[in-house]
Length: 290
Image (cartoon, rainbow, N blue to C red; front, top):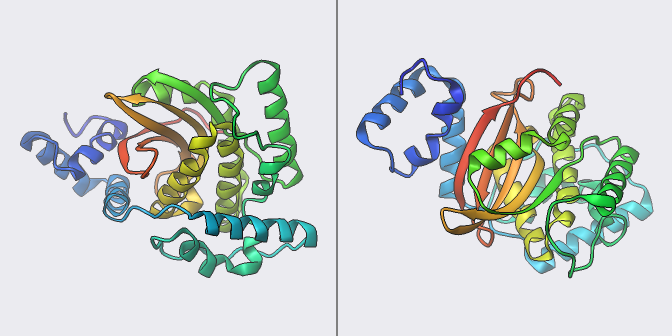
């Protein structure tokens, strides 16, 4: 590789570089690139933080507490502005509660309360790509729920992709309208607080589409990556399961930006589903402007 190569090519090497898996020549080339690329340096810093301090998943008690608060807020009709998110800590509730406060927890991810209603499938619901009349109905439900809360965006579960690669997942994700709809939702949010609120809500639209065994993993993995990459700038657009180099993985594709600019990238992550340990990462530019 040379310094003339595009940003995406360098970005794809960051995970291997962090793990010490690059050969000496490529490591030296990447180090030279990092000295002149603020975007890659920021990605590297966040990636190292994610690898060094994986977040703990929510316990059942924490999830019950959060859902009870959401339901109470739905009945009370409370609307409280969000405040900036604090630095991430290992516990999900420790990470959210100090920043948002008990009242704000009543409204975060407003669609979450719909898990047992409009968007919630039974625990026996099957995975697979959304399609046919059932997929259309689900997409309409998502659109209606989001529209009622002025959230915008329709993240989509792509199903079980079998043996695949990050490149293939990224190509498939870019072909779906969900990426563009989430991209527009990102642009429509005037503040970081609003982007954070949308990111949390979009996660709770994506998760119920997945098999029951993966729903908590989706929420935990999205939350951890969003926290490390300044969550207000990471909006989940697609999810999938599959096999990467023989391992079962959970894929999540985020619409994001370089250093706070317009939403110009699709970042696809591969996670170990139970622990949310990152197994692969690829960021690629999105063409055009939303």
